[in-house]
Image (cartoon, rainbow, N blue to C red):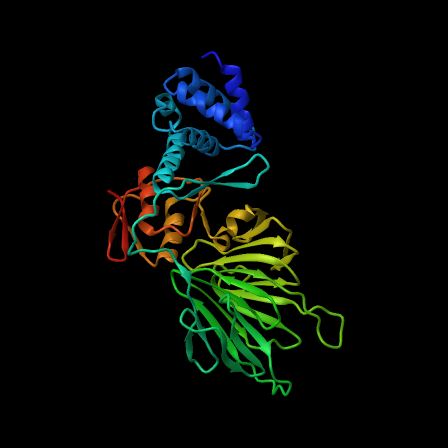
Length: 397
């Protein structure tokens, strides 16, 4: 094709998020004009191989970029030579086509490493019997009584020893001191999220907690001066407020206890930091990921960007580890059972497999606002076939 140099230039500008609106229109016009030209496919493939040699790129991400360009140009389905790309590229391309059809979000990595959100606006889907999860939780008080936070109005919910328990107008639960004549009795409360629920909590010391689906946190309604300790199941994200013990300059450590297997440490010691703990019983290991500050697990101290997994400390993808807190599934590198466990917790479904479990590694992120049928439609484009029976999803043909 005559415009090879120009196409290469415009593609690189687009991929690096530097293209002007005029350049985008020019690129899309060329793609539409040469949609059946083998030369265009060759340029795209050559650029993909070149970028794949760069450790900052992955083949799946490259093909998502290519297919998003083609989709935006209106020719995603007609560029036949693209189908000769490797199998992994075909899977990634199918995701883009499915997302275009569903009118949902897909994300790609921008040149700066930031997440670039691309939206395809189509008519909304019909109501579903399997909507996404939302703000749902129960608060279990010291006497065993249980409050549905989804149904409770804002304002005072209870008094627990020297603290009041309030629901703010934005839905968060907060503990405030109301009595000075503290008897020293400890009132333990538990917040529980069901499958399909998440919730936010402000602890008595001002620390913030986000609970993921099918999780719980147990804590005192008022922390003693000498210690701050909570216990969790499932997954929680923490932003810990530093605390100074009365009568000293020593910071009161914050302790997170969790269930663990294999004789590994089962607590995290914190001073002031932001971190995530994934301790679901059905996951193969506990994972603690650090965003800011430092935490100690056993005799190992984590630095920001590191995670503790199965007794070892290594670098981690922080954005992926806390994507649930920001309303997105991040399936990068996940296999099918890992993906389906996340769906089971968020959509309150049970998952079973018919025949062998397909071997897949996924790339990409999806909004947690999708209904279950919409998300299963995306999986079908990847040749993962699912059938809904009651509240069970059966994976397999």
